[in-house]
Amino acid sequence: MDDNFQYNILNTVNSPKDVKTLNGEQLTQLCKELRQYIIDVLSENPGHLASSLGTVELIVALHYLFDVPNDTLVFDVGHQAYAHKVLTGRREAFKNIRKLNGLSGFPKRSESKYDTFGAGHATTSISATLAMALADKINNNDNHYHIAVIGDGSMTGGMAFEALNHAGSTNANLLVILNDNGISIDKRSGAMSQYFTSITSSYKYNKFKNKIWNALGGNKDEYNKNRTFLRSILIFFKHLFAGKSNFFEALNIRYFGPIDGHDLHTLIKTIDKLKKIPGPKLLHIITTKGKGLTAAENNPTVYHAPGVFDAKTGKREAKPRTADEPLKFSEVFGKSMVELAEKYENIVAITPAMLTGSCLNEMNERFPKRTFDVGIAEEHAVTLAAGFATRNIKPFCCIYSSFLQRSFDQIIHDVALQNLPVTFCIDRAGLVGDDGATHHGVFDLAYLNMIPNMIVAAPKDEVDMRNMMYSSLSIDKPFAIRYPRGEGFVADWKQDFTNIEVGKAQELNKGDKIAVLFIGTVGGDAKQAVEELKEQGIDVGLYYFGFLKPLDEAMLKRVFDTYDKIITVEDGVKTGGFGWSVENYALSNGYKKDIKVLGIEDKFIEQGTIRELKRICGIDKNSIKQEILNI
Image: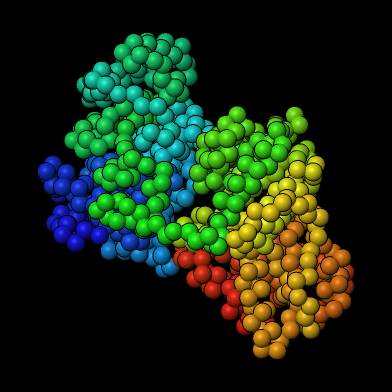
């Protein structure tokens, strides 16, 4: 943290009303202080850095020009919204962002009246903002503005285009701001485009254009022919100057830009003019992800969420990995993918904009023709995998657990219904820590469990994960493997691939009257609890179920015939999950045993460290021990 930096302007801003009182010079200084404040806080308390650094001027301009929350301001994803949080009465609370009982890392309606719509997943902003604009029309309230800020790759998602397609058929007072930081859309710049933007955003020009438009019937259906003709002429002249056709204009969305998203004066001037233009419109701004921190500007992917770093130099706090330290599950997955691709030429990897996070970079480098990053388009990723599976290609579809939820229909309709051999590699399963409720992968076991033809697996360690990946190659059915984001358990994981018998559970420890049954990596806590109790002379049975579906009913029969008390442990929701399935087996087979299900209760879990959240949810080592002792 830079202790010498003075926050003279920022410390006077306690709400957006304070921003509106500042002059041009003060607004520029506010941007400088706001950017430094985000750097200072996140250097010690890790969060999403680069995206929010790139939107500082935009957010200052928006709060200067609009009356939020009376005017609607919706952010896509939420990575871009840190400056918004700081300017809306949460400056001090921002120091505890993403911590237990602290601020959420994403916009959250229950946190602040200024967070109009929650956002942790991408491509939702235009749909939500359009609805609010249309709702105002229904309520005969046309005095409010409605702004959607989308970017950071979100414009690659199909839902954004669905919303634009709808918006173009309305006269909603909608302003979409496309924050193009070099990820989602190719840049177009130069004096001509800036000049053209200044003309097309001119109040007089648009007043004249709207008079002609209305004279020819406006949006009335009976004047469709005249309207289409006029629109064609206007687009023709715009394309003549712009040098290429415009997708947004084709959807009947008025397009302006691109302009420099870090030029505060131009931003304010342009957006102020756009306020006077009715109907749906899009402003394209060019920003630099990581703006203001050289290291982040040079490597925006790494500095998207860099962890702890030096606020002055940007140097990340790197902890050297020792030779006997396990790799993360994602890293083992990525290396295993390369090994399998070397062995089998029909293997492909598919990921929706998670190439780095899923550790598929090496796969992409070694086998670029067999690695597909489809952008933020989870639905497409799953159906693409299904299509591959019909042509003797073995697809590994690699998606974070909470994002896989978005492709639920495709999993059922395109994969499971046709019984296609797609392997789903589900990263970030279970509790993920400080990303909070929008990112916890606690629903996957339950929602996959209900789908016919699905094999649902959850390895206890990275060796089992590798073998499950290998085993899926010989299974002619959908095969889902879920694993956490954290460190692995086994340093010498790189062993020869071995086929695992699908649906087979393992007895890890023979006990007396009590048995603990677990699925997935939460077994690490269960194993420690059982071992510590054994040292106290208490023998507890321990059973590892690597497969939720098919469930090893032969092992369950053995357990229920042997033990009086059963405890199940999982890092997913209890409803419909592993414990639920065990209880259902007992009920269906007439066993009247005492069963205690440990897992996630029927509520959303907020942010915190994984250790804190496991304790709160009652699935950490000490909680499991206490449950056993209570019996």
